[in-house]
Image (spheres, rainbow, N blue to C red):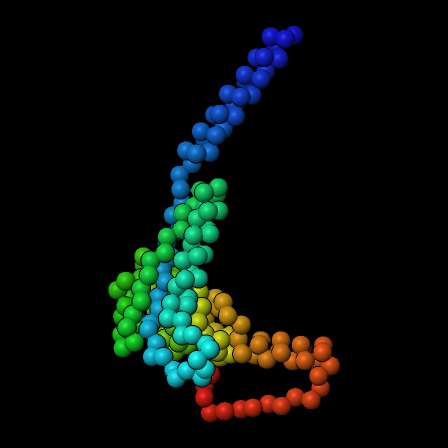
Length: 184
């Protein structure tokens, strides 16, 4: 009986080792992601307390890639981020067509609404998923909606609704609305 238990334990250990070899032999799936941004001219500072962050979206994308690669070790995936940061006067559609179209299935876009619509409407972008990480325009979620664009930020309507719900919950019923000529 003692010999039988020893054989069973050996079989279990060997099967565990073989299972580990099979798991590690699984090929990696590489997920290529493009990060497309255009440098913006800095608006005048409203306060010296608010620092201007130049690479706001890029740092978040790099952190997400690092985090996903940690998880990807267990799922057999590797995520690769390729950065395309364009000067303020560059043509975004041309850069998209030359560098990204047909090479990346996913694009994180830090672009203005007009540029986002321009690249989303390109024939090469129809089979891609574009993550809009910069725009909170309501029009992009309504009349300017595109099937291949996923918005990360809440829209202005969503923010206004959340603020209204918060004010009602706090029973602050006297509101003062300020409207100005600036787009943001």
